[in-house]
Image 1: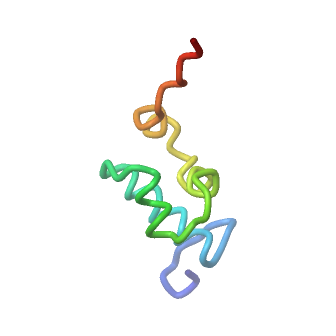
Image 2: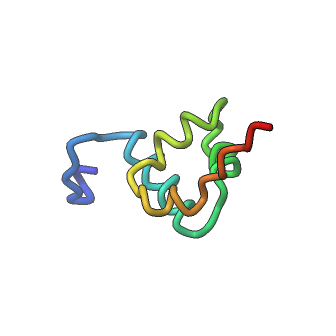
Length: 68
């Protein structure tokens, strides 16, 4: 990061994973597929990495199942 001249409060793999998750989400990749690429065990972890773009997350969010 330092050599590339990128200044960020968080460094290392977290930034790479966050950027990858966000870019995949922007390109329409579902969270489940992003989780597979990032080798996450749960969708919550994937959502954590892709959470910055709330507008895009709202687009891919599934409706809450109706209770009958």
